[in-house]
Every structure is written in structure tokens, then in C-alpha cells.
Length: 100
Image (cartoon, rainbow, N blue to C red; front, side):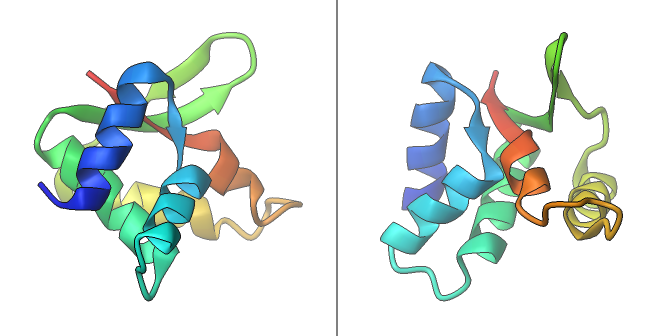
């Protein structure tokens, strides 16, 4: 487990970790591309089955996505690249990592 994965997982045991927060942690750890590092971290933790990736939805709260592997990667990247979002940082703040 990388230092980024360990830090994100530790925080995810306390509270959901947004992709934006994971990117901030990656930046603090010296990542050249913090957003890519955060995405790789989220996918790695999900692949290890120690965390789930999903979206915060007002009302129900965290809603985990059922996809795994390449399908999860595709969905995560597509959700972050969705041009219909009025605020480009909205997805980074709404997509979260939750420890299992």
C-alpha cells in the first residue's frame, strides 16, 4: 500500500474522503499530478476491496457505485469529465471514497 493509499484509507475510516481531498493529500505528498494520483488511489483501494467509490447524493448520503476494475475506472473518469457540470470542481467534491 502506498503512503497516499494508507493516508486516504485512514481518513476514510473516520469520514468519507472526497476526490478533491485525496488530490490535496497527494499534492502535500509531492505528487506531480495530484488528481491522477487521487484517482489511482481510489481505484487501488477499491481493487483491494478496502474501500468503495461513489457519489454523495443529498438525502441518502453516500451511494457506492457497483462497478469494479476497468468499469469503475471508466465511470470515475467519465463522471469527472462530464461537461454538463456547471462547476468543474463539483464532481471532485461529490465523488467520495468510503472505507469498508
